[in-house]
Image 1 (cartoon, rainbow, N blue to C red):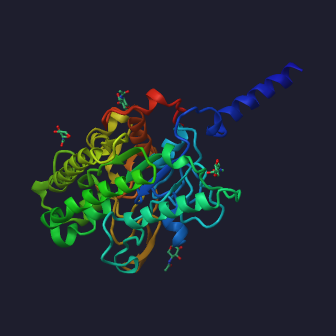
Image 2 (cartoon, rainbow, N blue to C red):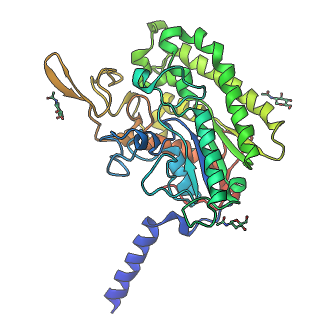
Image 3 (cartoon, helix red, strand yellow):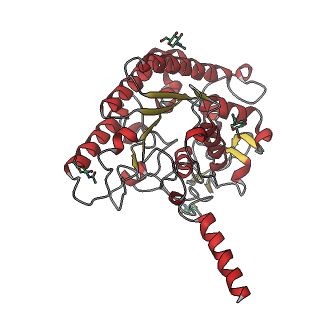
Length: 379
Ligand SMILES: *[C@@H]1O[C@H](CO)[C@@H](O)[C@H](O)[C@H]1NC(C)=O
Ligand SMILES: *[C@@H]1O[C@H](CO)[C@@H](O)[C@H](O)[C@H]1NC(C)=O
Ligand SMILES: *[C@@H]1O[C@H](CO)[C@@H](O)[C@H](O)[C@H]1NC(C)=O
Ligand SMILES: *[C@@H]1O[C@H](CO)[C@@H](O)[C@H](O)[C@H]1NC(C)=O
């Protein structure tokens, strides 16, 4: 009898620690609506254009989950901490559940309307303006189909949800090779203006709580170090390209200013600028302080060397080079890497970013979820 109840107790503990995060949280946000690119795409792109294969998803999901990482993204940690289920991509046609939000992000999305095609340059057709139209459609459907029993957000959710926006990296990087930093800087004001305009549109839909992510220090990303023109003098002591990182900081200042102005046109709303850049820069510069070993070297790649990145053979792909069939495989210890595939963060790095997002120490204004939400611990 004793042995039996001990067994039961253990079983209960195991169930409590591994089961549904929804059970315990008591936060105010009933849903998250996310807009973005691969940094927050939980399966939208691969729902529209199925093809993703391993080793993506190897750490957490155990199979490709449509995310550009070995495991969870920042938005996944955020949903778990808030006691919500993972967000269904809006484009998911098989069994989506939008009652607790939706994810409009797709890999390779831009803020500005693309001037090119997916099949030419790999840029997603689902730019921010399209993502905005999608949430308008979702809201309209959730009103008109309100009695249908479909897994749609209830009508009050749009006003109470958290709106997260993590986009702009592809606007910034996709033309760097052809027109350089000076060329890209010309249109960065349009990028931040479009983000501000989108916030106003979401506000008109009822949105009152917004978190906007700034851009990462892409000058430290293995893929860009290998692909963007620079000379040895441009490299800093951390192995990052100074000129591109400076340009990112220029963009981030524009975004900060633009959000500051946006607050004036969305009275009563919280518009929070989240400095993801600072968190990642610290990881790239001082990986060991956060328990990492490699920063500017990709876990999943081909070629070895300082970056382990070869633009010809992206993570998980195979190619015949000099008569040899080579494959870009994953390292066995992604928890020691900041960079997963040269362009995207590992789950381990995403966990650090999410921790800082939740404690508010890099948010402007300082907005600590941990203060007013009953957060689940990040697993
Ligand atoms: C449906 O709409 C009615 C009237 O607006 C509202 O009272 C009710 O809560 C809605 N139901 C859901 C499931 O959103
Ligand atoms: C933000 O706006 C306030 C007034 O609206 C202004 O005083 C402040 O300087 C602005 N800050 C930035 C970074 O633009
Ligand atoms: C190269 O190797 C990969 C992985 O082993 C395999 O899937 C692929 O079919 C091979 N390609 C060729 C051209 O042999
Ligand atoms: C927030 O989290 C980071 C990373 O764990 C930590 O370094 C920082 O001290 C925390 N700040 C606060 C205010 O808790």
